[in-house]
Image (tube, rainbow, N blue to C red; front, side):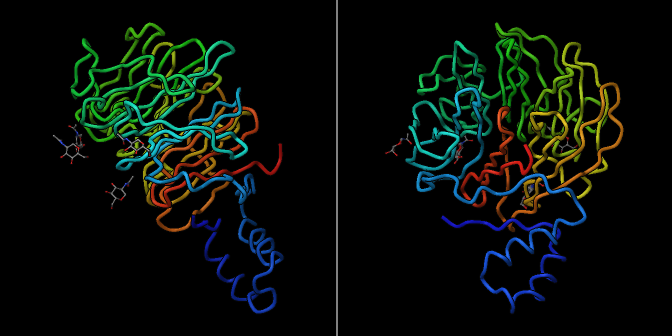
Length: 340
Ligand SMILES: *[C@@H]1O[C@H](CO)[C@@H](O)[C@H](O)[C@H]1NC(C)=O
Ligand SMILES: *[C@@H]1O[C@H](CO)[C@@H](O)[C@H](O)[C@H]1NC(C)=O
Ligand SMILES: *[C@@H]1O[C@H](CO)[C@@H](O)[C@H](O)[C@H]1NC(C)=O
Ligand SMILES: *[C@@H]1O[C@H](CO)[C@@H](O)[C@H](O)[C@H]1NC(C)=O
């Protein structure tokens, strides 16, 4: 499996490369040196774990999403393709454990919801077959335990609940669920469901104004009760109060080139990590204090190789490691924090 270079501030990178190439050609000294020069203007927060995973041969499709169960040290990966295993389970150390494809059609997003009593994995399925248009909950071993939506039927209905290309979800420890629906289908909505799947609030309009969406692609919740949505088509992140659904603000200024495709916080809550798919870039944005959304400010970035296409990512709440599902490179890579 091809490995992709970490390259930040590419102009500086190539200048440094030209100057140093003849002297240090091929040595690890060169690699370290370039790495530091290219990151000089930004804070260096993460580095690629080049030894992860131990078994990349299990990546046999287009890897669309990842979810970390940091409580149990497990990593779930979902991939698309014909006649392959759709869900792969690894340890966070990179060892392959098991796989399944039963009832999984076309996975898009996932979320690992683990408590002391239950390990589960949720998957949004954008397939149009008999398992599609749904959000499904599996046990850690792959047993299907819950289906939200109407399998095989896309729609805009709330009773019965119907999705069209549900993009991602976030599940709180209380069991409350936040769903972004979806990825370019009939719906452009953010829905909060209670633990018994009753709708608590909804923003459901397509558009560019506050609390309207155009491809709401990823969702996360911070420790101060704010819901963050990657409103990809509108090239912004919108923020809501998790209890009331009230709109709190939006960030546009960091995403003029391309909208955000994934949002997750670092475990200390200091940074929002944002993926930009076609730019093959990860941004680290300073999280604003409670009570203010303000403007966004990029503190650090990781430029991946061209066409890697980072789609969705997840972060270990324990170690801060970032796992990135790369649909172009057809692999998941792990980045580890330099300081812990
Ligand atoms: C499930 O995975 C197995 C093993 O890779 C494969 O032979 C089978 O065709 C897959 N099934 C589907 C429905 O993709
Ligand atoms: C269902 O999806 C498959 C594969 O993505 C596609 O080839 C097919 O045209 C779709 N069918 C409908 C009815 O949309
Ligand atoms: C939502 O609006 C955008 C333009 O603002 C349009 O391109 C898109 O097709 C609309 N989506 C739906 C589902 O109506
Ligand atoms: C990425 O590029 C593809 C192909 O040009 C395009 O269809 C897609 O909308 C782009 N995605 C984003 C998030 O800009």
